[in-house]
Image (cartoon, rainbow, N blue to C red; front, side, top):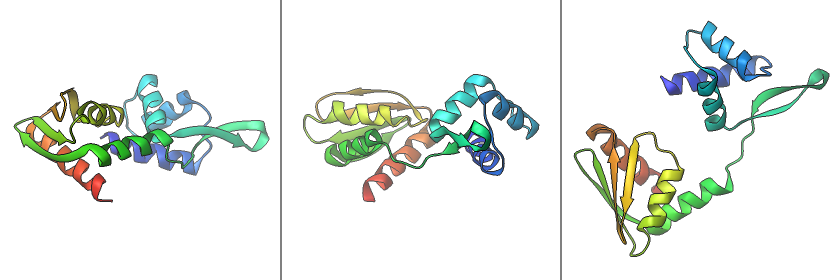
Length: 149
C-alpha cells in the first residue's frame, strides 16, 4: 500500500505543480488514499522530494535525484562489516567482522528497513527482531542483494 501511494505521489508531482503538503494530501484523498499531514510529510522525506522554483515565482515539489553521502556510508559500513546472515523465526542473526557489529547495526537502523522492530549488537553478532518470519527472510535477501551490487 505504501509503495502504491509513493508511486501515486511521484505521478502526481510529475503531472502537475504541487506546492504544499496540504495540496498533496487532497490530491491523494481524491485518488482514494486516506492520509494525514504527518503521513504526507514522512512520504515526502522518504521519497527525497524537495521544493524547487516553479514559473511565476512559486515553488513545487520535485524529485531531486542524489544519493546522500550518508546512504553511501551506510552501505559501505555494511559491505565492510557484514559476513553472513541467517534467520531463526522472526529473528535475523547477522555475523560481522570482529568489532563491527555495532556499526553494522547502526547502519541497518539508519537505513530504516520497515521490517526491523529493533536490534541488539555485540562484538561480532547482531540479533534483529523482525515483524514476522517471512519479513526476516525477505530482509536477509534484501541485504545480501545490496551487497552484491
